[in-house]
Image (cartoon, rainbow, N blue to C red; front, side, top):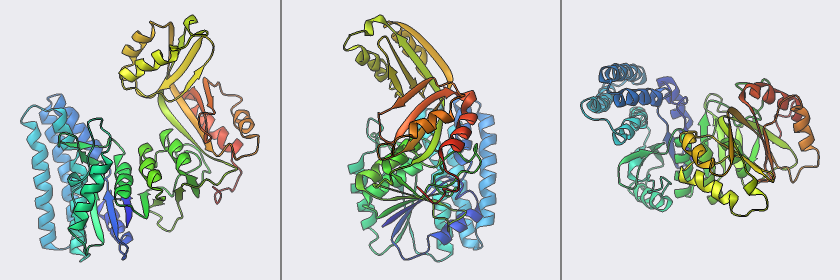
Length: 444
């Protein structure tokens, strides 16, 4: 059994969905996980925002606009009159459901139900196309087996048990279609795995099904050594380890959801990053093996806030850092980077929702300084296996750029730097010129 996940761009139009259908036509047993069509989730978020603001007329206009888009998709997608009729009935029912939320109080529970509509629509429309083409397949509702617990973490045992129950209903079927992103919560309500969660769905489903391989299909040919939107002459990395891929995903590589590596790593299932637009491209394979001896890639994470706590109480004291960390724990705010000295600790966060409350509590320990508009630069590779000199390459490349923080040694796979966001483009460009050998695209 293989898991194939296709992102929003890959199913962004009738033409793209036809291309996906051609990619999955072979005799290998597979589960195809689909995102919402590109632009749909953003539109649904906008609709939800208007409903929260009681701007119901504006919400209706946005709903009608999105509905019209889907009518155009139906018209372009099918040739069969019967299938086209079924598709129109489907989208009309979904959009009437969305419109029903303009008639009453809008809460977070309704918001989650609205946001789920994108994946429910894309999978049903795709299943209708397979039916029209005479391709045997079954639509598996993700809400029947995907679940998060009371801590909003995936319930792996529940997912495995219920997915196998669903699959067992169709012993002769080799092709299954299901939704990414959506799930139920501990109370049985419709919920989701947060933005980008379709990758996570695919990895969780792969682990639950003991898949032989997980394929993540996007609109770029694998994970690149640098951000191709900013830097010229980047290239796809042929091979990465799970740890290297996780570091890159967490610190800004947009092609992969940060959480999606762990379930695959735990079951040692290879993950392939492939390009729907260029299916012949080799892409990137992620496994437990690391091809050592090189710096692999650079990633950047924006919207970082740096916090420094200076206190004489730190000197020769124990328990100080624990007290500081407990502040962040109380506000469920993860810390990305940390450096310490005898009388100060600097750290970074990427979620500033409770920043004011956190600062207020930290002031009890000493003087607090806050820097916003920061960016984390993460340089990833197998630095223990590599000969000496990797640090020199990195810092020589960035010699003209002020470094706010440096973290090295927490992992054998990365060196992490904090810079002003205004220096990001220059930093990525200089690193690309300074640490990667030219024409190295075939090396990992």
